[in-house]
Amino acid sequence: RDITVVEHPLVQHKLTQMRRKETPTPEFRRLARELSLLLAYEVTRDIPLENVAIETPVSPMNAPEVAGRKLCLVSILRAGNGILEGMLDLIPHARVGHVGLYRDPETLRPVEYYFKVPELLEDRLTIVCDPMLATGHTAAAAVTKLKERGAANIKFLCLLAAPEGVEVLRTAHDDVPIYAAALDEQLNDDGFIVPGLGDAGDRIYG
Ligand code: PRP
Image 1 (cartoon, helix red, strand yellow):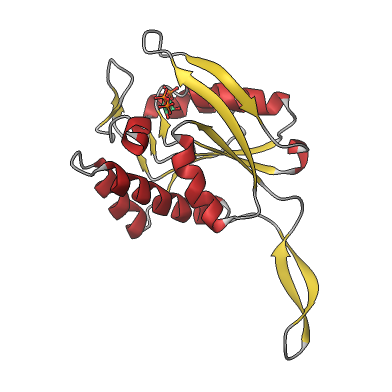
Image 2 (cartoon, rainbow, N blue to C red; image 1 turned 30 degrees about the vertical axis):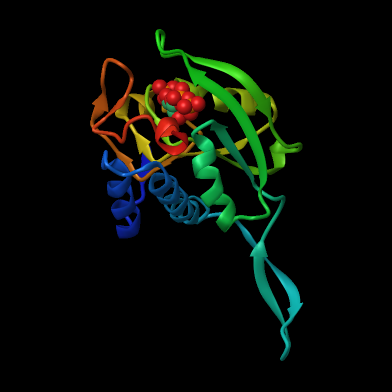
């Protein structure tokens, strides 16, 4: 399957509130955070556990904990930060990377302006976060850079995906599972997802 669409009712409800054009910035930002928390739950569903010896106030026991190195969340600036906050609510110990990419309005191609990620990416699950997978070139470029830094286990998480973006990311990196709250119909000539929710960065930050 090319993309996992998280069908949970709360996810779908919150996404609809985000899509409404009258939803103001503070509300939009809060919804992005809540929605991301729910998506984080789904995207981490298959991370491995290991049993460790602990003591409850009553008795010793073996209990499951997340195994291995702390995972890494990568925010594609700037709108990815709107997703990152909710992810960190659920995974507070995660390491965080930032990738600055903006889309040239003429060519719709990503331009890099910042790249800072944690060490030892090869040993971490790396979750790349960006609200929108539109043409897919931003996501593909970010994943390429992360692989150059050693990341070998990468997932991509967005709120909304366009079929064109899914195709581009899948073709460039078929080992990267894609998670979204919805798969929309198409892109328009300006590279916006239709029906979409508008410009996520502008709606989060004004
Ligand atoms: C948006 C969005 C993605 C990118 C998606 O960012 O947040 O990063 O466009 O487009 P693509 O799939 O066609 O490459 P934008 O360039 O608006 O920057 P911003 O987040 O800083 O506002």
